[in-house]
Every structure is written in C-alpha cells, then in structure tokens.
Amino acid sequence: MTGHEERIDMTESGSTERLLAEAELYGAHNYEPLPVVLERGEGCWVWDVEGRKYLDMLASYSALNQGHRHPRILAALEAQAARLTLTSRAFHNDQMGPFLRELCEATGFDVALPMNTGAEAVETAIKAARKWGYRKKGVPEGRAEIIACENNFHGRTTTIVGFSSEPSYRDGFGPFTPGFKLIPYGDEVALQEAIADHTVGFLVEPLQGEGGVVVPPDGWFGRCVEICRSRGVLVLNDEIQTGLGRTGRLFCGDWDGERGDILIVGKALGGGVYPVSAILAPDDIMDVFAPGDHGSTFGGNPLGAAVAREALRVILDEDLPARADELGNWFMERLRAIDSPHVEEVRGRGLMIGVVIREGSGTARPFCESLMERGILAKETHEQVVRFAPPLVVTREELEWALPAIEEVLRGDGVELFESL
Ligand code: PXG
Image (cartoon, rainbow, N blue to C red; front, side, top):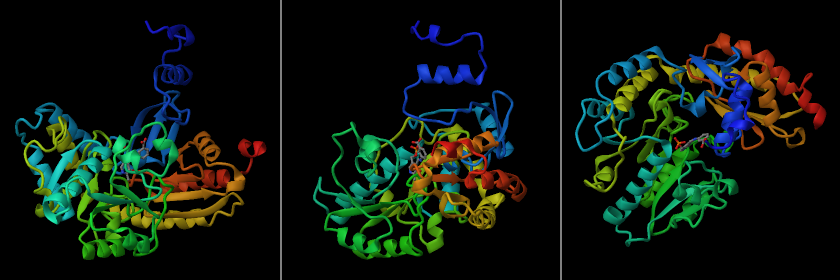
C-alpha cells in the first residue's frame, strides 16, 4: 500500500482521467505531457483510450520515422523474440555481427559500437574522443577538452547536462564533469578560436532539434568539419534526432557532404519499438577501445539487433529520406503561406519543421493543446516553437488533411487560448 489509492477513483480503470491521475500520483514529475492517453498506433496515427484518433506529428522525437508498428519491423521483433532475446556481451549472438556490418555499409564507416539509448551513445563518443586524444593525439592525461555548442541537446546523463546551456537541465545536478567548452551554434569563427592544443573533439548536432529546430547557416557543418580536420580535432556528429532520413537526407550532414569522424545514431535505429543506438567510426579511432574499457548489458542484444536491421532496411527500401525531402519542402511552403499574426517564422529541413510563435502571442503550449483538440499531436519545444515532425511514412493526403486545422490554430481563429492572452 502506498497510501495513494484513496486519491484516485478506482472504479474508472481505463478512463483518461484515471490514467492521468495514476501517472500524476505514482510517477515522478519530470515531464509535462499533453493530457492525452494513447493506447494504439498504426503508421502515422494513434488512438487514445476514449477511441479518439490523432495524427502523430511528433513521431516520438523522430524515433518513429518508420511509423507506428511497421509490419516488417514488428515481424522482425516477433521472429527474434521467438528465438533469442539477450546474451549479454559475454557471448556472441547471431544478429549483432550482421547488424553492425549492415550499419557500417549503410553509413560508410569501418566499425560500430552498439548501445541502447542516445545519451549512452553520446557518452560512448565522448569516451572514444578522449581516449583517442590521449593515445593518438598525445594530449596529456586528464587534459582532453571537447567543444560543444550553446543550446545543445545531447541527453540527460550528469556528464552531458554538465555542458548544457539550459539551466533547467543542469540546476541541482552538479558537480559536473570538467573538460567541455561551449561556442555559439552556427559560428565557425568561434570554433576556430575555441580550438586549443588539448581539444580532442567537437560535439555537434548538424541541426538542433530540442534547441528549437535551429537550422545553422548553409554549409556551416561542412566548414566545421574542414576546420576540425585541419586542426586535428574529431567531429562527433550527433545525428540521433536528425539522422536516418528525418531532414531529407539519410544524415543531415549529407547536406554538406560530411558525416563527421564519429557518427552517433539512435532513436529511429530502433524502429520505434526498441531502444538501439550506436557510434560509428573509422578503425583508427575505434581501435582505442580494448576489452573491458566500455560496454553495456543490453548493447548489441539479438532482439535489438534484429529490430535495427529491419528498421534500417525499411528506411532504405522505402526511400524515406527522399519522402522527407519532398513532403518537407511542400509542407513547409504550405505552413509559410499561413497568414498569422502569431507566427514569427517557419524553419526546418525535410520533415523536421519548427513554427516559431511570436513572444507577444504567448508560448507554443496552448497552440499544441488546441491542435490536440483537433486531432493533431505536436509538442512544443523551447517554449516558443511548435514542432511538426511526423513519421516519414506520412502521405501528402494525410498532411493535407491536417493543414486546415493547423491553419485555424496558428491563426488563432476561435481558439479559446487567445482570450487569456
Ligand atoms: N542527442 C540528440 C540530438 C537528441 O535529440 C539525445 C541525444 C538523447 O537520446 P536519449 O535516447 O538518451 O533520449 C537526444 C534525445 C527527453 C527528450 O524526453 C529527448 C530528446 C528529444 C525530446 C525529448 O529527454 N532527444
């Protein structure tokens, strides 16, 4: 007994109200989700416990690029679950090798190191870069430095939040790991100036997702890669959110013809059903790892590997990057054509689109709540930005269906929220 039971109406077991109350009472309050309780999903659509249907325009922060319950991915999951799910890395399994080979072939890197969540993969990249710095670059032990960008989002571990510029991600969680330096995003002169003798890596998102869908100046990522290459600094390319088709290319760095020295992938690699992440690198970087240096109980497990193999094949077979490119350009144009006093800017690449709400029009949150009432699930990021990032299997017809409601909400026509502004 926890003493919470008397505060919930126990009779209404499946209702939205009851489920929200349970999550509120029994869950830590580290999130502020929209008040919708989902129970089913298929493709771009989800249904709540009351039977209402919504177009999912968040796609779990790009972890669902292939859509909900893609039949091929589910089949791979089920077939593997019926054979073998976990071995730990104490033994080999028959899925991991093929998975890593296929991931290397798809990305053009020599070797991969599998983990589970995005944050773990970022931590792995940081460890690889530091060790490379000591073993290969000759940085004195304990002095390696990594440059990251202001407004970054790379995950939630204590090391990663330690170099966040967002106070709420950091406050109360110190002391933090030393060895990180921040530069303004999109500023290659700042990068030039920040690189010092002991700099081993530049950790960067080629387009900032959580930071509010921030698109850097054209060619900036490529110029950063060039600068880093000429100064002996590794580019740690965090494509956890931008990768695997989201921005209209297989990787966002492809817009500049570069994938960095260490490529970090996650989210959609697990096909929306299982957490799978990895880092990829050339042999002469990855070979800094030796047995015992690093690992994960679940990393490379056969269930995740089988899922990721199919998740990757679906992205390639269905040419999801091209879909994101074509539909993203079209959809962004349609959003830009909406004449609204509340919209400051529409920005993005492919199907990673942010609509920036003017400061004077309040925050993006009530806009998302109004969209929800009209059967569209989107989530605000960084207070002022409504993000539209549906599964990449979305069709033009489905987006067309959503546009009148989006237009109505963005204009504020008859939307209650504006009365309180
Ligand atoms: N890098 C980038 C660019 C990300 O967007 C991560 C790393 C971390 O991934 P994991 O799997 O550890 O969450 C992300 C994650 C959240 C949240 O609830 C996280 C992300 C987006 C939205 C919400 O913490 N992105």
